[in-house]
Length: 142
Image (tube, rainbow, N blue to C red; front, top):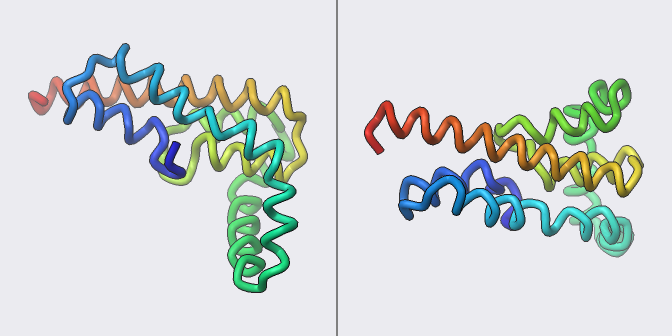
């Protein structure tokens, strides 16, 4: 449930360092990854409203929102939930469930569709991560 770590880092750690099988790492990584998403979508507007009372947080949120909008704008405006799915499903740094939830919030996407889309994206990202971990683990004998 740690932002930016998500399943793309937890799965390789669990498989390589802890010796877990992929099927042991998958459910915990997906659950931990998706658990905060409904809360972000439901309550972030309250958090934003509260934090905007303080100039320090205004600057941080303006920077974060601007960066997020810039990265996602074309994909989300054109493809909406399909763009959100692709954004979450690609296991790269600064993509994933937390950023996907922020994108859904910023672009005012439908709550139920966003939850489902982000969940599917997290599962896809997890399977990509598992595949890469198994592939490179076999190559390097890990």
